View 1 (tube, rainbow, N blue to C red):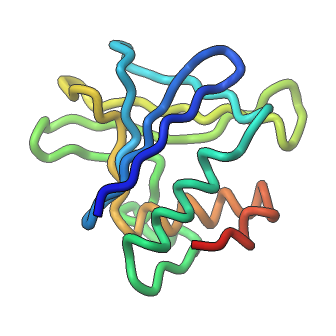
View 2: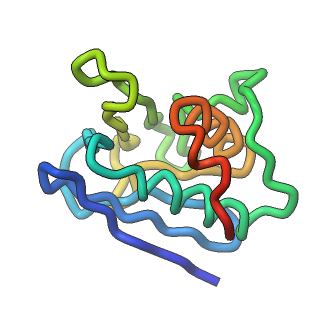
Length: 139
């Protein structure tokens, strides 16, 4: 089953979240190395990633990263032999005013980032620390 939804921030930046049976991808039609997505107006994209993760992987449990392989900050694409990344940046010292930065591997097409189960668990763990209201998301 494939699930997808497009999200647009207040500046018009768009990220497409695509979930399938094996992973969750963040994609864009922009031809840039990096997407800076402002979360100030809406955290719907984070809620959607959590919902799709719960449906994609059995026993999905957000947890702290304990190794480099579980850390979502860097993503290595074997096929392209290149790294991408995903991280948060604070905006104007407001705790809940954040930007999500997505960096795609060199040579990647529309897919900027691919979550496997372990990386998604650590990502959602950090999301819930910043936005506790997401913890109650239903499938």
